[in-house]
Length: 69
Image (tube, rainbow, N blue to C red):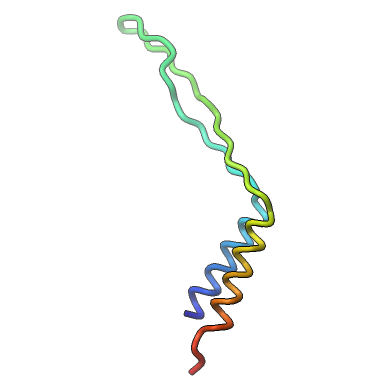
C-alpha cells in the first residue's frame, strides 16, 4: 500500500504542475475523388490545480493508513 500511496502523491504533484493538456485530432474536410483534404483540430483539457492537491491528499491518507511492518 505504501507504493500505491507514493504513486498517488506523484500523480497529484504532476496534476498540480501541469494543469492542461492539448491534443489534436484529424478530421476530413472534403473528399473529392482522389483528393482528400484533412484538418488538424485542436482540443484542450484543463483542470484546476486544486484537483492535484486533492489527489495528493488522498495519496497521503493512503500512505498514512497503510499497515506498518
